[in-house]
Length: 113
Image 1 (cartoon, one colour):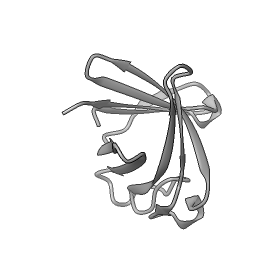
Image 2: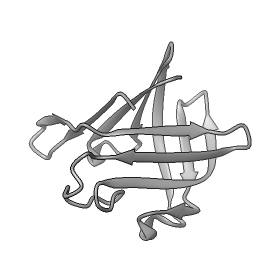
Image 3: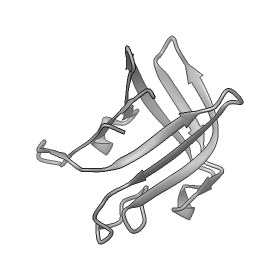
Image 4: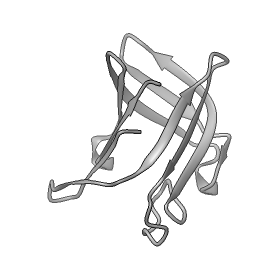
């Protein structure tokens, strides 16, 4: 993970110093792990104690530049069973992911290793 930006209701964008990774497996699963260095960070719909971790089967639509994961396992238990849709953009070795619903207000960027 190279960048996590969050936009609040007023449109103010904040960079959060997260670190993490996303893995798309050849077997059709997606795995995410990310950490806020501030262990006292407020929980979000995706995090507990500043940490985010989930995985499950993923469906990728290259034409629409979208993917959807159905969460099988997650640190935040109420995500289990949810289908989360995301949009993506690939530019060379950079992957940018945003939620399908822009009201969620975040953007994350990864670099291929």
